[in-house]
Amino acid sequence: MGYLVRKADAFLREWKKNPDRKPLIIKGARQVGKTETIRTFARENYKNVIEINFITEPSYKVIVEEGFSAEHIIKLISRIDPTKHFEENETLIFFDEIQDFPEIATALKFFKENGKYDVICSGSLLGVQYQRIASISVGYKTDYQMYSMDFEEFLWAKGYSEEAISDMLCHMLEGVAFSEAEQMIFSNLFLEYCILGGMPAIVSSYIERETFEGSLDLQHQLLVDYENDIVKYAQGLDKAKILSVYRSIPAQLAKENKKFQYSKVSKGGRSKNYMGCVEWLKDAGLINVCECLQFPELPLKGNVDESKYKVYISDTGLLVASLDDESQIDLRANKNLGIYKGALYENFVAEALVKQGYGLYYYSKDNSTLEEDFFIRSANELIPVEVKANTNRAKSMRQLIKSDTYTDIKHGIKLMAGNVGISENIVTFPYFCTFLLKRYMGKQNLFQ
Image (cartoon, rainbow, N blue to C red; front, side):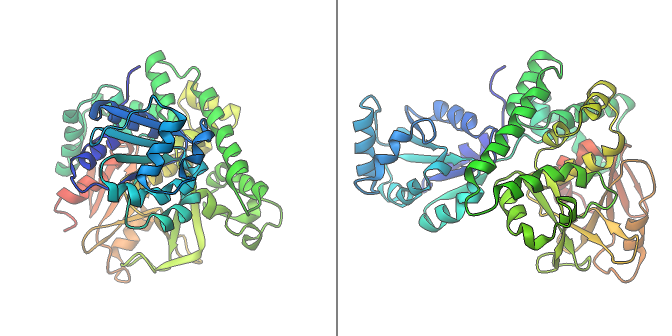
């Protein structure tokens, strides 16, 4: 299978058009497609591409020994490999796996001032190393966060056009239900995407073979790689504790109360025993953290109860891969999600919101059944987003909308296996429309 088109492609083209472009750092978890995307862009836009990978070619770590100026670095690269050609204004220098050599970030300032060569850096677990990198290259770089493929990129990979996606948005904006055929096609595609997740190698393999065969092995290998990364890069923290926290997430999501609990990580576990573990996993791009609001009102920042949060796996396919064998068979063969149905859909929605640039917030009222999965905001409204694994009524949402206590809440969005619908200030969308929420919010008039 050829190259899978990514949203990062358009970003890179825009970056290249900017005459005042700065060196670019592309961050993202392992295997989300960073290297392939940069290579494809480089081939199409530059006469010369100098690619240096600091994991597979550690000998290049000496290139800063004479100083960090662009001239010194280029001289030493040429000495190590005389076949590398540097032509002014025609060359991209691509430093890959910079988490193994964060010192290279010091050079970005000098490459910007030199202005003769474009520079892109990339690496996984950069969140973890990033404090160091950010402090030494402040003001001289552009950052771009890359995630695994979202549902829209998956649809592109399956051959769907922009037209099909615009049509989905029209259904949402006009409140018009999908036909039975459309509903069935998109729901099946959505289930495929949930099972596979968005790692390009896994999606490619699936599209090529037209079967899930082998996809679970690839996912299991990725989970092993992530755990190895934790052991390799978690400096100064207890690696075993980070692993325990990471491994406990699927079981925690299957609970009725999805608030993350350290007592479920180990018997008698307390948050003070696990300081920094959740933050490390979040910085590494392996999880998404959903913060609990003290009260459902605007503004969202500064209105958070720091002792409560939910934790989701950043790629739903990897959550699915970490379930037990019986669940795998149930899911892949019978398309039945059993007890994980709610957890899976909630994890998917969290992932889709993050990939659209939303922060994750929820609300759970003490001593009450009032709970709301997520919130997004318009210019002047707070909008609860509820994820339903069944077709039950959204009781908490109605309460939030109707009560005079919650003045910022006037409408709600419900995501479920059903069709598009509007009733009493609640808009219902099928799960497969979640990736379009930001565009919907920007174009409709209901919440203005």
